[in-house]
Image 1 (cartoon, rainbow, N blue to C red):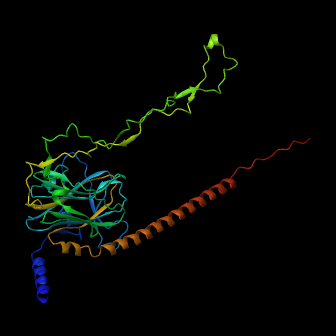
Image 2 (cartoon, rainbow, N blue to C red; image 1 turned 90 degrees about the vertical axis):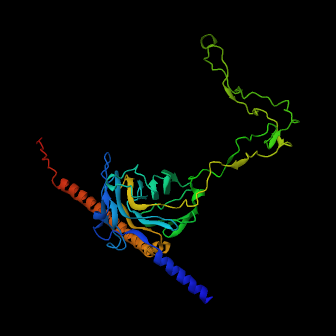
Length: 400
């Protein structure tokens, strides 16, 4: 047992020594402006990021990230780093997002690129290796995008992953394992997992419907049939509408002038609708016909579907109607534990933000109330002043 424990510790130590953090950005100072490059792609009105902790925070200096600062703008900012591949390794993409503006429509995701990216020309059509993160637009779109590129084609995940839509900081983590499985975490808690082949339509399906098979002509897939012995009652047929028996011809009705009077029609209370025989179990029912499948000749397994040959850039390529989103704690690594450890203070940060926002909301409400009272007092003073300055009218009484 002791040898097993010792072996496990040695293996973990070796893994930790080989694991690597390829990129990390916490926006600790203004040096980010030298390392990150704004796109100058023509035809877009780009917004600027500013380093800020926002309007409410846990630790102002520690919580500073880069914040979108202009409404109704595209944002295109990226940075490059030493290239790496993921063969035989985990790939972890992680960052935090704080939509403190209570975002109504806008992206909060990142794009990861190979070395072909030209940061100064990054735009919406620039090829990327993967796209990951939250996207919100109205009540209908509140999702986490996980888009993977394979053979120069982008593939969307076929599962729905709901993102957070409040005003506090949340961490988004994507882990792609070398066994072709993946995990999506929000705030270090798993919200989705699966395998790449099943959850993306990257490869052709393993099975297809047999093109030479068809449902037999005598295949009866009706669970029930009309009862052949059921007969329509003799008194069934009744008109849907009948003349109103309570109606009478108006006294001033002139047949020569107005035509022959006819009572208005009303719904017939005895009308039963179209008669149909009752249904009985079909004795010839064989069940739903299932189209047989065959192996897809176009399918070929890809054992290393997870593998990225080259990654060396990450960027924000977004549109936001209402600005104010703060991005921070960006990490790309093959060390799952390092990514998890980077978020060890997240809960304390979230609690601090909530307390700060509550205090700020209370302060703003009190200030608004004070201003309202002051305005009301000013209006009363103005009314009193108007009365004090009202001109006096002298009354002249003529002597009788």
